[in-house]
Amino acid sequence: MAVRIYREQVKTRGATEIVDITGLASGALRASGLKNGVLIVFVPGSTAAVTTIEFEPGAVRDLRAAMERLVPQSIPYEHDKRWGDGNGYSHVRSALLKPGLPIPFEDSSLLLGTWQQIVLADFDNRPRTREVVFQVIGE
Image (tube, rainbow, N blue to C red; front, side, top):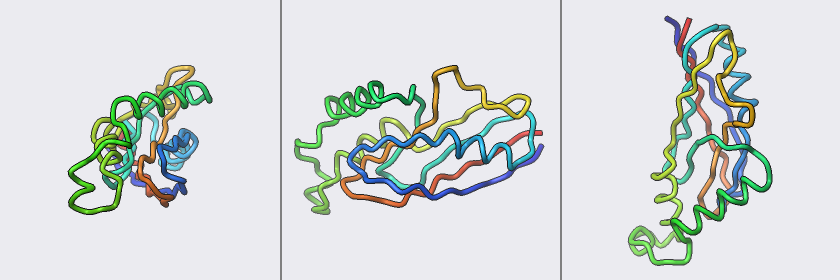
């Protein structure tokens, strides 16, 4: 069993920007040289998350709209009362989607569905440079 860790920087605009990071994940897997195992994708921080979706404009708009319906930016948040930074909603959105995601791989290929891509969702209310950590565990 081997473990490899890779880090990438992703610049985002915030405001629930959804970024396809499937290529970065595949690159980390290739660099690892491992054949079978699991790749863990993780974004440090409390205002971003990773998930999978069909990365096409309609599905991306639908995800953004769903997050706004579930966790509206326009309502009061206790976090904002305490810190005054206006991003309480982004912390809640991140907590719901989660910062990490395991993806199995076999024969050096991620076992994603045909229309399934790995995405970084940046919910913060300002542009950020996000670190994405890829931990590859396998043989």
